[in-house]
Image 1: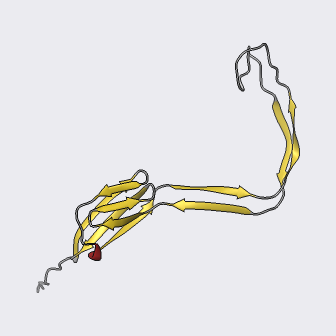
Image 2: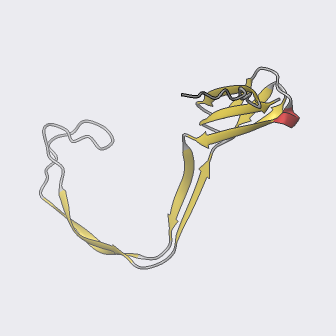
Image 3: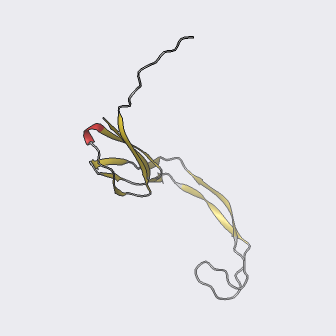
Amino acid sequence: MSSSIFPSIQSPIKSIQRGLFASAGSTTISSIDVSKSFIKSFSTGSAGSVGLSGSETGTLSPSGGSIVGPGGGGNAVAGGGTFANYAGTRSVASGTTSVIVKEYGAYIVNSTTITATGSCRWEIIEYL
């Protein structure tokens, strides 16, 4: 039986730092050489909106329900009354939909600071 001894492999990685941001902001990290480092981040949240153009048609008609006595403000039903049920058909005619989504990330500001645009996880790898 023979055996072989291979030279040990040395990693080119000097350090790895990891963390997360719950919201937008900056944090201090251990000092790195910016020219030999990079940051990876992935979003853990997003923001945005959806817009729909087109026309909406149809009717909803109330049935049933009773309001008993005065009292309560806003949408409260006073004295044990019940809300009406609404039945009918509504439809939306074709149009366009516009979806705007923003994902968050992090970036290196200088050798001791990183900044995030929103909630995300991050990892900085520094090479020798």
